[in-house]
Length: 434
Image (cartoon, rainbow, N blue to C red; front, side, top):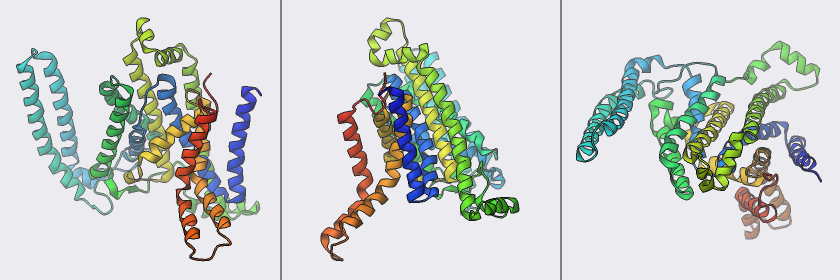
């Protein structure tokens, strides 16, 4: 069987799984899986760019996805005028002072002679800048968070269309990746993994605790949408008449129509990114990245700046994850920092890349859809299976109760089983790199 035929069968199988979900469960569930599968495929593309192209072991995906979600709040939500009047300018001034302190320390490091003078100068600048920053920042934050804390208590955003937040989410994630990369990419792969995981946790901790930024754990709800609200469609006489003429329930049809709009937008983003990443893979830059991945010493001997190239691909992959995070928050309609967990937004994405095929963009997309379908459907399927197995057992029997309770853990068991089977029988993934 040719590679094209095999790959076609793989994606046809994914299509059958989604269609089967719609037929045997509900079309709402099928479109839910499709939309999050598209987002997961975008995340997998970003990770594959880092790991498959350059061999960078990034375990901080969660942080970059969260920054993309934060971008939707900062761009699309309307500004809170009262909060800005109470302390917004003080917060902005404090952030400028903090940045100026860091820049001043960097300039002092380059200007002062090496030795005790340089060390004392930098310490004085950093300590003085910190206390000035806190003196301005704390008062501004308290004033902002005191304004209508039940429903606001933060500065809000720019009130722009939410679609603008998607590329901005990529820019935020890329900026964070550049800062991380400048300090961590010189580390060995295992230390890089620890560093990226720790920094991702710091990003989540900041989002949870800085209420002035995005309400912290109080969450931001009611984010603007690129698609109409279902209730508006149900109150639209033209829409109701059209779908009723097709024999559809307007309530059901409005939900399906909105999800199809999201699916169309996400498909455009995924296809566009896939084309760009494929062109990068087959370009001289892509060949250089794979050469660095396979043998850094030989690449350096040929005059390649390995650290600079690693920084490039790290920033690009993180930007793609940031775009996916903005898409996901837009689909959810709310930003909930407490839901960003490494299991869902880091390790599950890694399973997608490994199962699909590291180093192959088509494999990353396949892994995104397959693993997400399993993540969603395994638990209800497992519960149904346990109910069939225990159908003849007496009510309250210990084995019956144990088996029914264990269905909740089918997700983790299945992920581990799939990963083991793929690593045993197809260690390079379902669609391996050529």
